[in-house]
Length: 283
Image (cartoon, rainbow, N blue to C red; front, top):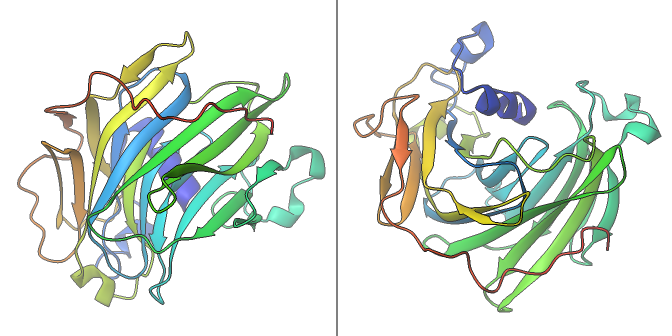
């Protein structure tokens, strides 16, 4: 499903399918922000959860080969998740040959790593982390050519309690050595038990930056509001002093931004944060 969403974000298109029509009344509509930014070697974003519900994925840093964010599971457990796709388009991770699989180059001791399927296939990592409503969390994804065929993507998460960045994991995948592109964020209801549609999910995204291939940091000042093909309209998005926001579910009304419209960031820093880690994606 997430691979399908990513392709959707990159295309910036909404198309109704029979499967998505069936989600009406079962799940909140997945809502996304597609960011206008150049290809780059690093993608930084901040995210604050305003309202959550069990079975929600708040994704801060998505790009053409993976996604990075935080989840609240059906049982209320909370975690950080970072995943990178294999180059194939199949659904069974066991059918992917070793030479085409995502390779792990680095893992923090507290991180769990495994394989996933049924949404494309790839490598996935988890950090148990009891994130809080109203706290701003910081995410950084970097890319480094691993060889002529592969690119190494690293995920860094800032832990306020430790006052330090944690290099969670680095995954290498076949990407032709190409950098980051196709940036996006989303809010998704994966509980899909009908009750989940009655619960509001809201998140803010702000102070986003991309380090272009030439080395210059570019501020993310513009996004585009899109959604999956679930036809319900209790969704909304907009811009405020904190950056951009997405809302889905419950009694939300689509009154601020129409689907496919662009949103301008009202305010923002003139420079990226000074404490971003110096990365070596091959460690």
